[in-house]
Length: 610
Image (cartoon, rainbow, N blue to C red; front, top):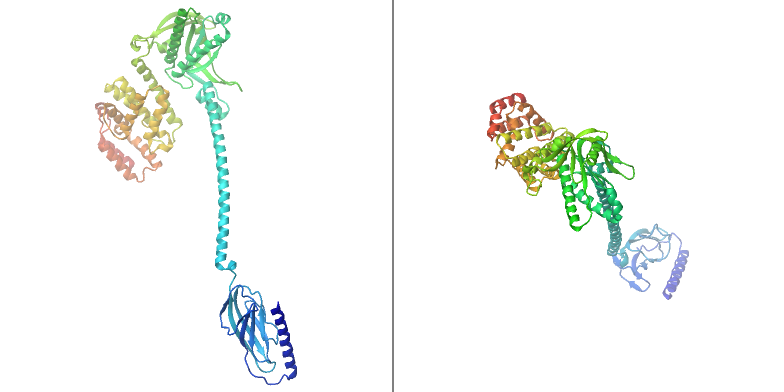
């Protein structure tokens, strides 16, 4: 503070001195031509630099600076600090200039001088630099930037972590609810599957309703407990229900194993039908097999009741084969049911039967007479039907049963021969309804051709019946993989998957399924180890020796072109010519059945394709 006051006194003294000098001499008086110079620098009022140099550097604390000039007393000045001042100061007599709180930066102090007569000029006195404070330095700014970036990154990471945790929590909730929905959906589907046939249940879930379908070949079974009304009067209701539940539980397991559809139970009556919803030729035989198992079960219970001195229950079973209408009835409480004259006739067969016996109609007998021994009852009167032929089913014919009276291997083979026709029809239908429209060669016609040729060659080569079934199945499934448009490049694997899915439903065991798969793999890999491999090979390439070869090979060319397998027509012709030359039929029958020679086929191919 004392220093500031002394400076003020000094400024006043300098001003008065300049004023007196100016008034004492006229303007035209001659002055010494002395040029001003920077004599010293005072920093913060206490530090003095007596011989200042150019390009000096001051730290951030030494930013209060007084510049003093050495000059004649007659001079007046203008000051300009470049980098700080906006314009020159006014003309003043002070030979010093003070700057306080100079910010960081580079500066140049310039001065103009004159003696108010003829002497004047402009000088650059000094260049100097004031350093920024430590918190304003470049390194500090870089540190701030890094710190801010780190804080932003930390905040972002924290937000992302919170978001990830929230998302994880939400995903867990969604997954849990999705799992719950899937479980509930599965429960609903299982419940519907237990109440309705699988296809009907799927249609109901997808469309909200299921259409009624007519089936022309269905076998309906009715069973009824003899004297149930009297038994119900004499038996505890809880015991009665438990016994009925035990009977029907066993009946359900039997019909499910044999591929028969349970329709309903009404009191003591049990109703089921074979041939729905999957149409098949074997349903009369399968329904009677189920009836025989039901009959044996009730006989076993009867014998046990006799030993224990209890009352026994006996059932009547009636069976008829014919046409029915099947569908879902009801809006809220759904029920799968069947209607038609066949149902009524089956009910009459049951009511016209006898306790402990299986009564079938003459129509059903015609379909099962090769499998079962039946006793003809003659024409029996039926309400609203007149007289109908009826038969009691006794047992399986001797050549088709084992020592326990159950179906033996021959019985199973006989059933499988019937199933072959159902499976072939199913695959052909899949080709006609599900396959892509541009399968001009690998289509249902080719399946029929290979299947027919396989059957012909098998008969000619005396293939055993068991081996024929496997060979026939392989011929039907050989090109089933082409049904899927996405499996054109790998039809073999798709065919193998179809075998697993379809043959299991038709009751074929794993041994048969594995043998069919082996034949198909051998055919695709051109492996010939057995007569079955040879027959399937000759049936597959039968078209190479037929009269319609040219027509078929044109279809193959068109198909492969559309699937991007052919890029050059001439190259493709050469490939077919090579196949004709290299191929040979293996079985004697196939060689004899060849209609056109290799040379004739090649000539026709070249003429037609070119």
